[in-house]
Image (cartoon, rainbow, N blue to C red; front, side, top):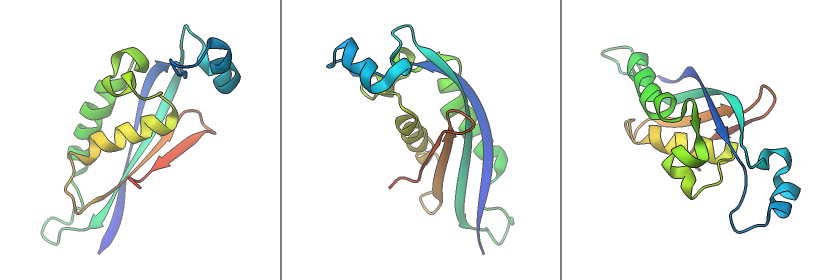
Length: 136
């Protein structure tokens, strides 16, 4: 039997969308108020979905306590209440857009899961703006 389990999480973080190789004017034209040099923050909501075959012996796809712990360590502890541009290693070279944040989260969690499991990360930057990344 193939199923998908989901785990919700939440974290708060600040960021600034900009490219160092662009002028302040061009950054403002492209990224608008999200390019504020003093940063701005979001209350991110996250849904992590894992798909695969249910273990016949345990009845689990994955122990949700283990998934919860991975999310806490790899995402919440790593990004919560941080300035993503300055405190999260991956964003020293990546612009911390919602797309890139979802990509970073996916990669951090992918390394913790069995390769037979499919992973999807859905990241809400606002209640109406969200991205989904499946490693494609």
